[in-house]
Image 1 (cartoon, each protein chain N blue to C red):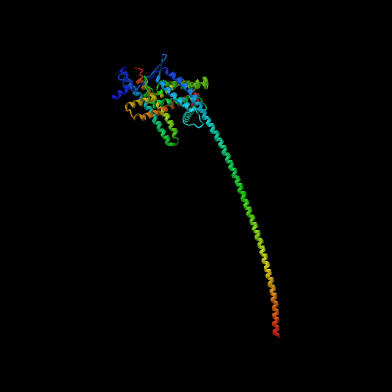
Image 2: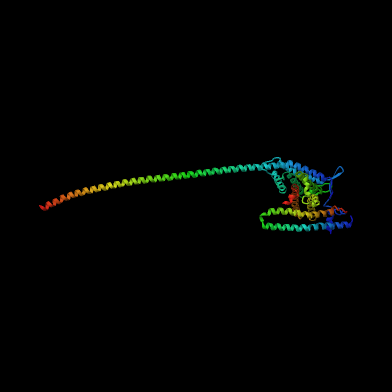
Length: 138
Length: 81
Length: 255
């Protein structure tokens, strides 16, 4: 069981040779490909992160623009509304004034007609009373 | 082979492996108990504890294996035959 | 008693009865000059090395950025051993040691599993039997000595002769223990791997001898598990020894 012989040094030499050959055919190429892949993944991740940052920035910019536009449109709407209200009020006031003027005119005319009617009536009353007086005195 | 040497070798081989199993048995029991305690206390560390436990168990086991090697020497490569 | 004698017979303890089913210590010798080598170990080692090289070449023949199939598997293996080495040696100095530690892990892992998964009994060789290369003490001692050389090399390359300062670093009184450590390290490494693999195969063989069907299956599963763990332990310890040689004794005690 414990018979050491030439197996031992030959095994050592064989193993050292195995380490050398494995270093060439296994460790070096695979280590290289793993580090390459890590670099690739890392650069890709940083690129993706940059793009994500850019996209985020763009989205922020768009949002800001959107908010600006909304604010602008709201102010436009407000000013338009105000203008419309002003115009409406003005027109209403004009119309009211006109109506009032017409009303006044109508009243004046009415008054005039009343006056003239009164005058004619008074004249007629006078003539009638004169006639009645005449008849009574006759 | 001298029958006396033969008998003594067999007894010695049995004693070697038997005695060599005592200490590692106690040690492995202690280690496993502590590992279970550790897992019960901190279940999220189970993987790490198990790995370390297996490694230490292998180390303790090797003490018995040394006894086994002595037993095998006495049985198969007896230096006194 | 009958079983006992059968068992002892079968593991070749008594030569009286030719019931040998389990063979330990029988080798298929090749002669090179006036030296001998264990042929069955070399046959299996070449198979294991061939498997590793074929898998590696298949994985790297047509390298894609998005891996698939065998390339994915081997990249997983590479990342596994790289993480193992990094965990032991540290971020700064682990790179040059990945091939050594990783090949240790992959070789031992494939060797152990080849012994457990392939029914080598089907292939007849003149003497001994084909099994995992790691159940021969020569293989494990060779690997353990390489680990020793590797950590001496690491220490020398890092600190030159100042590496020996670690033997008398806290106090020269511990010099014998420090020197003894250098011997116990490869000894324990090699015996741990050898004993585990041989014990697995023996236990499975004895159980198969007693109950040929189904009963040995759980033990075989345990054997697969142990084999994988032993490969991991060997590679981890190798990396830890290299780290210790790189760091030096004083810093080692600091953390």
